[in-house]
Length: 112
Image (cartoon, rainbow, N blue to C red; front, side):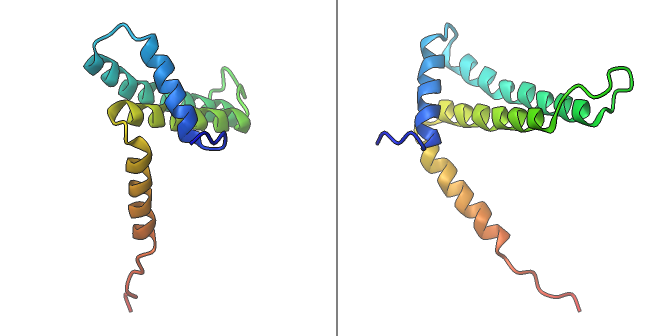
């Protein structure tokens, strides 16, 4: 399937591109891709701080569009990390999303 709207097609290409430039052992590359998530989350925090002007010395340095872009980077990085962990990333994610969705529909009994 070659659907340009399917993010997993792009994730697959990014995974292949990263692997073609990888000079590390597979286990090390996997661990570094997992650590990359922390870096990207840190960039979200930096953008939020910049968008809210929380650093008085720097003032407002980012926009909420910057925050959106950084959040997208986190999602893409996580998807590539998942693909690095398993070639079945699409199915693993879909099943996990179904479980999360099902949990969100659980009605809690009224405490009264």
